[in-house]
Length: 201
Image (cartoon, rainbow, N blue to C red):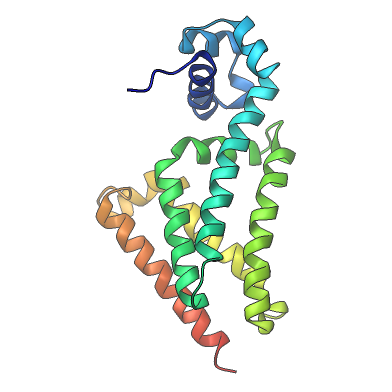
């Protein structure tokens, strides 16, 4: 059984608190209390609250980037790889709920909005480069890769950020295994429809 050291306890407490109340609402005193450590240890390991927040972000985005690149850049037809990409992204969001809470709060005007953008854009660009290279038609027009990225990003993220609303629409828990499977299947169908259109030429 793994016993967490002080750094791990601080990191876990910060992740939880940043998810619950955001960067501005979190204090090093509260993080120290939750982690059963003290502010001196937070300073020793992370220097500042900003350093601790950056460490949490770096961990999330490194894991996300590696996960998505592994799905997208594997061998095989683009259709299958995009399907794996969607599955991997949904699995990541399903198992990292604090990630979405932190990112959405900051994107809406938090102090760390720029950091979030700087982390996200390179991930988007990797995906867009692969699609643009495979389908030259996506370089402009109604099916430009930028518009496709916005559409699919929205279709995935909204399912998680609006899950409380969707629960009333679906009349069941959107996070249930069945509903997550249905969401993945629907998105893969949407990918197929787009790719069929792109391949018509």
